[in-house]
Amino acid sequence: MKKNKYSKTELKIFRKNILLKIEEINDNIKGIRSTSSNDSSMFSHNVLEDHSEGTETHEVEKSFLLMSRESDYVTNLQKALHRIDSGTYGICQIYQDDPKKCTAAKLIKFGLAKKITKPQSKTVLLHPYSKKTLLNHEKSLFTSITGVDCSWALAEQVFQKDFVGVSRKLPPLLAGNPVNYSKINKLTTVEAIAGAAFILGDESLSKNLLEKFNWGHTFFELNENLLHDYQKATSDEQVIEIIHEYGYEYN
Image (cartoon, rainbow, N blue to C red; front, side):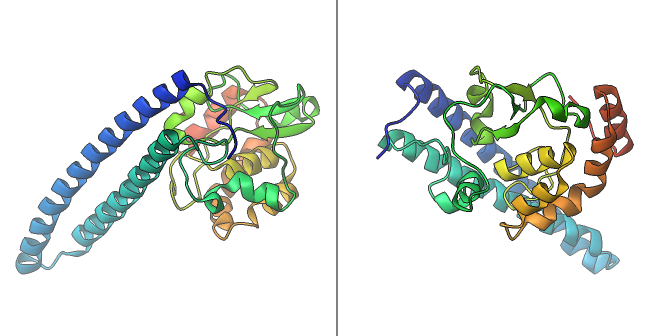
């Protein structure tokens, strides 16, 4: 077993935040169940009255899908607590017990990435809270792309650390992975790196990375037009214009 890289204080903070997140999600699930119950009653009534069940059926199915996804999230967070309590809280699986679910580990396995403890100074470090957005015309500044593999539930704490490299955030992209499907910027490590490679002009590398995942094509199906537009942007202002055209918000 590898020694935990986080201090006891850090793990205590992670544990507290995980518990708060679990409580928040459980409240969300209760709300979804309540709404679904009301929708189901309305659906039965409408079938008898005017047979306009299509919309209600869709809403009920969407609610159950959302509830299932949130329940899976709680399960993963509970696994994180177990790893913290058992002293096996690792670098790759911050909230995943199954290494097969770690996209970074899979990239390393296929020789498409390497595990590092300290990034290079000329790497672009994908940092979701950076003030600067990754732009294509900056590609001459970078010799590599570095992704920090961690749980989104703990991202704020993880990225409080000072990392070596040139920090840049990705412009808004839709997740293609099954856990956070269609959520803005809730990307896996491979999606983030693939998105960065595409924006910097290496479309071949981007697609090669995601070919190793059976859902990888979904990321491109959701973001292909966005990615091509981001490639052409030369400033944050242009990125904002693109986002507004697609009807998304940008922070």
